[in-house]
Amino acid sequence: MGYDLAKLTVRRIETAKGPAKLRDEHGLYLRVSPRGAKSWIQRLNIQGLRTDNSIGHYPSMGLAEARTAAFERWKIAKAGGDPRKADGQAVQGPTFAEAAEAVIAIHEPTWRSPKSGPQWRASLETYAYPTMGKLPVSEINPSHVMAVLEPIWNEKRETARRVKQRISAICRWAVAQGHRTDDPAGIIIDAALPRNGVERRHMPALPYDEVADCVANVKASKRASASSKLALEFLVLTAARSSEVRKATWDEIDVEGAVWTLPAQRMKANREHRVPLSGRALEVLHDAAELTDGSELVFPGSRQGRPLSENTHAKLLRELGFDAVTHGFRSSFRDWASEQTHTPHAVMEAALAHTIRNKAEAAYARSDLFEKRRLLMEAWATYLGA
Image 1 (cartoon, one colour):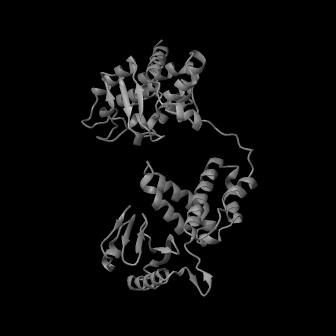
Image 2 (cartoon, one colour; image 1 turned 120 degrees about the vertical axis):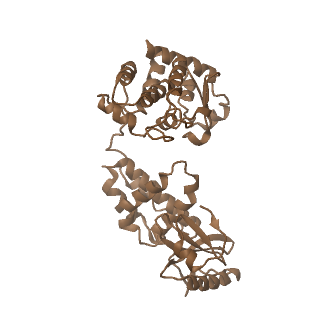
Image 3 (cartoon, helix red, strand yellow; image 1 turned 60 degrees about the vertical axis):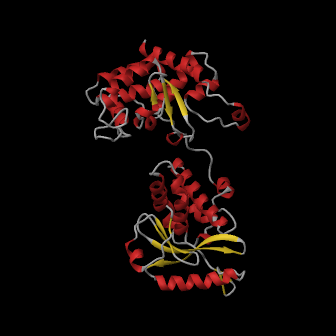
């Protein structure tokens, strides 16, 4: 979401669609949220610090009024003063909900998934806004955060963690903008909330000695399309993530070199990843080539040019009676490699495209151990075929 440099008019404001930033003069711009809400923001250098400050909402504050307010604030800042202060008292600044929109607008262009913004808004609207949405972000304190998190901490631990992280990110943005001096969702909340009481649930996965039977049942099933069945087998053979397989394109595949190269933007770690293709994986690709719908997708969905649905395989496995999800096959592969082979830990982790968390170890890990991984993936395919 970039700036529109043309000067504002009432017509442009009324017809503007979000998300957008419509720039005017003296640092004034109109922020249009994805839902169409419009607010006046002014970007100023205040005593050496660049800040974005909310000065009103459209249409309650019209264009002429916003320009007048922006010009007066600009003059104060230009003279070295702080326009956020009136009668010696600090202006409250944006509400928590307005600050949240500002944070989402900053990060949205960098998020790989278009679902991230809506997920942020949905979680905040459900859990945070009823308590603190209309409060000035400068007035949020740990008791507000506890009021949001305590009711869901034990019942919905993972959801609560994400809400806490998002509240923290918004409050840290407010610190950077000069609206507050601390993060009320930080270490105080960490100490106040219980750390135990909820067992972390892992994604259901099959024991590795049941994976071959599962693949055979999928291949024999009449509940799924040929493309869907081939995609699932390819996913198992490569130990890849579901989205990586469903969105695979032919330009990523080097059949002659038996390599599948995933670009950084499609990887969780945002780093290019090469996958060695076993003989059976190449056979799957050969069969998939006969099902092309004219698009670049290796495993096209039911609609031309569209990938398979993310729920396709989960639904199929459930209907066939297998207590597993597609991501669980990565766990099955990892257990097999650990228990049935002498593969070094680094090779297994590289096969799963896991990031090395230890910074010192990562600094020396210059190789992707590709040839060793090729042997491992061929052994996995042989195990499944046997």
